[in-house]
Image 1 (cartoon, helix red, strand yellow):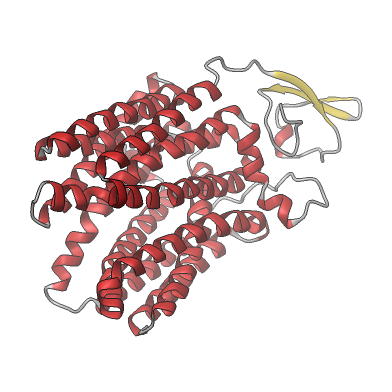
Image 2 (image 1 turned 90 degrees about the vertical axis):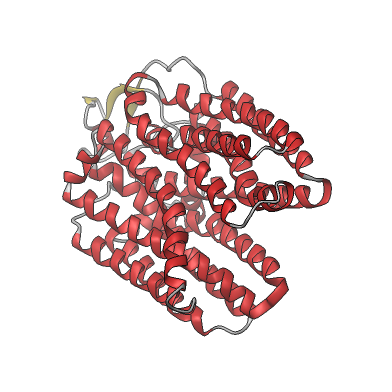
Length: 442
């Protein structure tokens, strides 16, 4: 898996991603302490609102950036996003009002909504070989899981020496280091977008979403995102309730439970490159989604009985199943979207997946608090089951046969015509029909 790091450009991009993730993790810890300083007992409400603002920024800003990304140099967009995040993080230690926290969080997460889809769209161009790209996806999954374990531990160690405000400086340093690494990388030029002349900003902003709704496997990905969001919301929101309230264990055990979730995800991320050499994305992702429903059933039993070892196993199984769905997602989008529309497609995935979390996070919290954990398990498990079965129906098992067709009105060296043959006033070639600006929707 580490062989892809021999590619200098990818090595620098991956290092930028890891360092920025650690900086973000430090900011998460510091933000909780800052909220407590400002709001006291209402800190939970402040953080809940900040989380909603974060998700809203992701849902709204990512498609807007996708609409104009083809007009901006990739490196400038990535570096500008990092510098914006660094500037916002530098301001956070000086706020003393709740509304200031909300404004800065919106700016910070808007910059992240610009950075992440652009970064995801660059990697397939840097690593065109599918095997290399699959390994990169697994490394990225590992980076997210390790960050969730490492950043809180690092923050705890630093807080024994410094006050929490200094953690924001660590965040600033992380984003500045990320920008420096991106600047040092030579990024491939993106292909020219193929949207017909006259398409406005709104049409481009919604192009990725329209691609998702027009393509069977991407429609399935939409509901797979919902299944994963149901499981991750249950873990993220209610772990502390299970550990501290139901099982009456110490605060340190909250980290152990979250670590079990991360460990399950990491194990699958390590195994998937070899598995995907033999199994299709469809098989792995749908199996993961259906496994989530089994784990929810097990969680119902754990909730009734109240067993600490069983909870750890359940959280690890949740992490494994979510990783089965999430890790191959980039491969699926790369195969389903033409190269010149990848940024819009990744922006749509970023926005739509966070729309699911925007729904399931408050649902997990409200149901757990108002009706009990068992009610939350049943409701979110039903969502996961429905989403898994719907994805199975939406994603056809049979690969569609290549469709022979002609293109007219494209310039002769257009990248889509690389394997086409000149026929009269147009070009003829054959491939599985794509739902983009060049093809009628199937």
